[in-house]
Length: 609
Ligand code: F6R
Image (cartoon, rainbow, N blue to C red; front, side):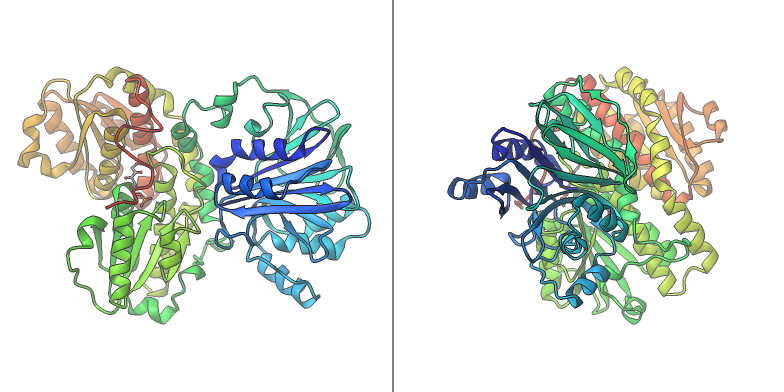
C-alpha cells in the first residue's frame, strides 16, 4: 500500500503534490518523492523517511513546472531508502513513474531489460516499468502504456509523465485504487480522495482495468485496450476528516473492513493456481532444512502473540512439529531451551516491538534461525531476521490491531500447510482442501462483516458492563483471548478469556445475573463440551452471546443470542470468529464515547521494554 498523487495545472505543483501526499501518509511513510516536468526536463527529488524529509530536501532543491507526480511509500520490494523511493525513472530520464501495488513478474522483466542493456538503480519492482516504457516507447505515450500494461502482471495503480509530453500524464489502474479529480483547467489523480479534496469535489472513480489521459483542459478515460469509456462524475459529500478514513468514522473500523483485501493480498502469489501447493520461497529453507526442524518457538507480544497461539494449533495439526508460543518479554529472560534445529518465528506487525526484537537477537546470538512474520518490510525485525514472511495488510493506523492479526493468521496457515506438505504429514487431498479453504477466506471474512448491525446492537445494550468473559475450547480459546484483549484496550471494559472447561476451577464464582459471556463454539469436535460450559454459565444468570457456524441453529436453545458465521474448515474458524469480536470491541468503545483509534495509555509501536 502506497499513496500516489498527480497534478497538471497552473498551481504550484510542489504544493499540490506534497499537500496531497500529506493526506496519504496513512498509506505509507517509508519514503516520499516528487517528479515534475520543469523547463523541458524531468526533475526528481526524493527522500527516505517521512514527508518532512522530502520537504527539507525541497527547500534546498525546489521543483516547479506544469505537471508533477508524487509518492509516499510503504515498502514492499526493497528496503526503505532514497534509491528505492519513488518516482522511478528509465535510463535516459525521459520518463518518471509512481506506482502503488506489486508487479508480480518483475524478476523476469528485470532480467530481460538488463539483458537489453538497461541499468537499474533500485531494488524495486516498480523500476522495471520505467525501463519497460523506455524500451517500448514509440513516440506515442498512450499507445506505449497500453503495450506496457499488457506486459506487467499483478496489482498496480501507475501514473507516468514524459519529458516529450509535458502537457499530459497517463494513469492506469489494475486492482489498486485510483481516483481522478476534475478541476477547472487543472486535473488531479490520486490513490484516495483526501489527497485532492482541498481543490475539487468532482471525481471519476477509476474502475479496475481502466486508464486515463489527464491534460489541463480535460480527462479522457479508456479500457486497458484503449477503447474510450464514458464516466460519471461522482460528487464527494464527505468532509475532509472522514474522507481520510475512507468515509469511516474511525481508522479501526476502516481497517476491520479492509480485512478481506488484506488477507487476499497476503495469500496472493503464495498458493498455486490449481490450489494444490503453497509457495513460500521467501522463508529461505530448503526441503531438507524443513524436514530437520524438530521444534518451533513462536515469540511475540499482544495480538501477535494471540496469532501465534492459533499458529501453534495449525502447525502442530498440519506439520506435526511441536510448537511453543512464548510472550517475548518473558522469553527473552527465560533462558529458553532450544535444540540446534529449533526454528524461531517472531511475529510482529510493526517489526519494532522491543521485547520481540530482544528475543530474536538472543536466539540469533545462539546461532538459531529466525523467521519474522511482519507487516513492515523495512522494519528492524525484517532486517535482522534470517528470512521474512511479509503480511500485506498495509499500514495499520488504529492502535488496536485488526487486519494485522488476520494477515498473520493467513501467513501462519500458509506456513503450516507448506511445512506439512514438505514433511509428508498431509496428503494431497487434505492439502488441496485446506488451500482451497484458505483461498476462500477473503469471501468468508466479507460475509462475516455483514453481522456488524447485530453486533452493534448487542454492544450498545452491553456497553455499561463492568466485566465480560470470553470462553471457548481449543483454537476457539485462542480467539477468545484476542476478543478479550480488543474489548479491554478500547472499551476499557474488564474482560477475561477462559478455556471454557476451566471456568469451574474458580472463575465461575464471578458469573452472576446479567454478566455478559461471549461463547465461541466453532469447533465441531468440541461443540458438545462447549455447550455444557455454556449451560453452566447460563445457570448462574449470564447473558450469553454465542458465535457458531451457519446451520447450527440448535444453539439458540442454550443461549440468549447467536451470531452465525459462514462455515469454513474448523482450523480456519479463528479467521471468521475474530471479526465479530473486533466489531464488538469497536462498537462498545464508540457507545462509551472513547477515543477508539488512540486508546488511553497505549501506543501503536512499543519500542521500549
Ligand atoms: C493490540 C495490539 C498490541 C500489539 C503488540 C505487538 O491490539 O495492537 O497488543 O499486537 O503491541 O505489536 P507488534 O505486532 O507490532 O509487535
